[in-house]
Image 1 (cartoon, one colour):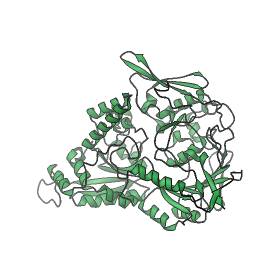
Image 2: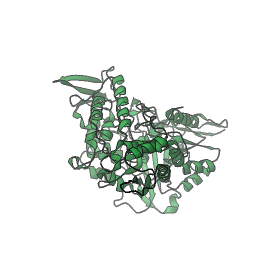
Image 3: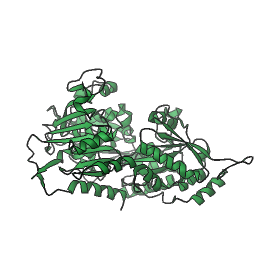
Image 4: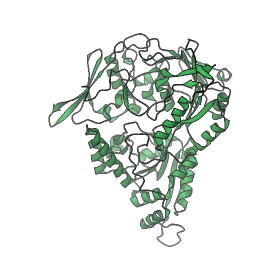
Amino acid sequence: MSARIAFLVVIAIIVFAVGSALRPHSGEDDTEIRIAVASPIGSSFILASPWPVDRVLSAAVHQALVAYSPEGRLMPQLAEAVPSLSNGGIRFAPSGSASRMIVRYILREGLRWSDGEPITAADASFSVKLQRDFPFADDPALSAIEDLATPDARTLLVTFRPGFASPGHYRPFVLPVYPHRHLAALSADAIRNGDFPLHPVGAGPYVITSWRYFGEPRARATLGVRSVVAEDIAPAVQVLELERNPYFVGQRPWAKRVRISAIPRQTGLLAAVTAHQFDLVIGDPISRFSIDEARANVTSAFTVGKSPSLRYDRLDFNLRRGPLTDVRVRRALALGIDRSQVALAAVGDEGGVMTSWIPPSSGRAVDVLARYPTDRARAAELVRSAGFANGPCPGEGCRTLDLQLLVASGDLARVAAARAIRDQLQTLGVEVEIRVAPPDALLGADGALIRGAFDLALYQWQVTPEPQVREMWSSGSIPGAENGWSGDNLTGWSDIDNDALIGKIESGVAEEQVARWYGEQQQRFADALPSLPLYERADLIIVSARLRGIRGGASVPLTWNIASWYVLTPT
């Protein structure tokens, strides 16, 4: 069974395991759904946030023109339809030797913001332009947009530069639409640090009515946001309350209210679940420790499961300096590491091992890593052929392979994975020193990975359903002085044939061509092996037997269809 199917089976079990002693609640206006999350929510404005927990909130209060389904397919939200060649939403206009792709989005009729004002194409156009001010929203498709036109209140015409026809052209349009009336006069910093992320005007099924949190008061008081003493909301450190958006055009939400509590300590989360204080817990990425503890402590009134994601842990090799510039050394390490055992040590499950740099949960993944089964005899041969000893090295001119492994802190599972890798490589005579460092020390502006100051690095990565191949693996995405130390090709892999394949992927229109080029690019990746993808990271979820309607998927936050959730009550 594939990882994707297995994940969907887990979610299906959670959704459909209906107890015989329960019946649908009447849905009257005393209805409430209670959610707990493992990390405090910082903002509903996800253009300024990389954190998955913020997307849990954003999905409840904002909508985009189009959105992903749990299976990774596009579906309309504020738009009437997903633009395509067949429905006339995509066309090509001649432009010299190339052509320009023009995409038309038409808004649904009667759309209104949560304050009652109309949603127009001008809001959609403004929101796309706004993405350029926030690095987390940066995307090649965004850079390829030449013009945004609004011929009427419901139509947005997007013209891309000549030659650009990437299958990921829609990525700027799966991010939320925001009201230009409220934000157009503000700078990026004023938006990020102002009132809007806490009390947004949105188009989603719910509106935020209050934030309560324990901690230092905010620098500027905001209506409905207040600091409280710890005892008021314990064991939570933050409580948000949401109510139905009266102007929501989609399905009327079953629950009048949604309460989201942040409880960052798992012991507190499990105790609150046992006391039946929540209907759903969305935990951190699963570790061997967290899922075992949850299963041991949660009663039969709840189901412990996994919510799939497009996140995974990866082991990067530095191709810019040192012994890992030799592909024989990189291949030796891949053959010497038993990734299923590393996954078992980290997340308590041998499944979910990566088959490429694209997660199995994505429809673009091709199994290109099967060529690297655990084979320590072959690994030892490669180490020797690269000029290194497989053990003690007393002779003159003898070299040992000594490497430093940088590990992003904040996750016990990742540290456990690092130790498993170190122990396995010792059998090849490779000595690995583990250094745990804060994420900023690795990925900040002057971080070791950005500056190429590392041998090995172990950290978490996330891709989108249409993977960001240019950002991750093009030569132009290697951080350096010439591009202001930007780009996500942290390994320093530079390959002219790989760059050519990326160009083909971005210019392809026919799906069968794009799929073939994605496959060839992944084969090229496996040949060079700049990074060793390890295992996918699912999120821990705990669901009450009385909560129905959840449909999880790697491409969406769990709350993507929160309007469809409902609660059963005892008969």
